[in-house]
Amino acid sequence: MKETERMLEEVKLEDSKIGDLKLNDIKLKEKAERFLIRLDDEPEMIMDEAKPYITLMTQYRCAIMEIETKLKVLDAEFSQEYKRNPFESIKSRLKSPISIADKLRRKGLAITVDNIEKHLNDVAGVRVICSFPDDIYRLADLLAGQDDIILLGKKDYIKNPKPNGYRSLHLILDIPIFLSNEKKHMKVEVQFRTIAMDFWASLEHKLKYKKDVENEAEIVSRLKGCADSIEQLDFQMQEIRNEIDKNREWDED
Image (cartoon, rainbow, N blue to C red; front, side, top):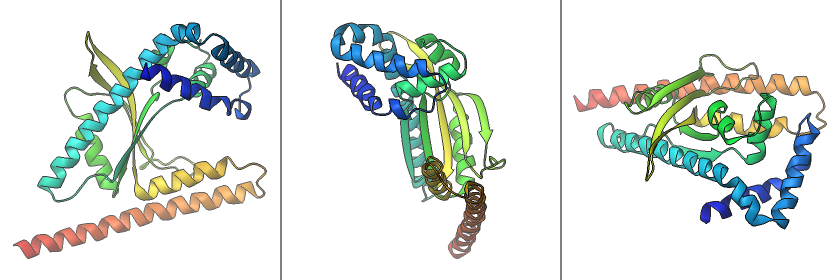
């Protein structure tokens, strides 16, 4: 019942966003609006129809919990063994129903539970915020190398930034979840960023949705310059940390 109520809340939250969707296919907006009308008129019937979707979203949430647990175990080990933590924080999210429908439509696929599971890799997402770039690679390798995880895909936007300056390491992982009657493999996208990379990406995301911006090309160029400066800052801070660690080792000797 709690999952049903959660799904209802998610759909109602999306209600206010329908008019703002940047979709070429107006039919998807119309379908979303008709669904919300039916939700008010026939809630029990709608929820019966939505049960497979709700079940799948519950399974994605379980997969997120599995990833978070693995990361927290690694964090506890590093804290004990090396007196430092490999990451600062973890954030997680599930794609909203309308975002899922829009992505399937752009791929030319019908909006079905099977297509969500087979063709979308980022329904479940975990973002790991690290202090330093080398922590990102160490933690990503340790996570992806665990024997119950399968690495399905990797995009390194740190070594190969996007044209706008975006930097992050993206992994698509296959992870098993253990349900009452089955073991099921789920896909989760895990993004690794430094604090500085996350700061830039969050602000860039907000700024790019501002409408009627003058001198857009200049702003894009300045954002790219900020991203380049942040990269230099990340590695300078990492060098300072390495120097401090080296001095600490000498003192202990």
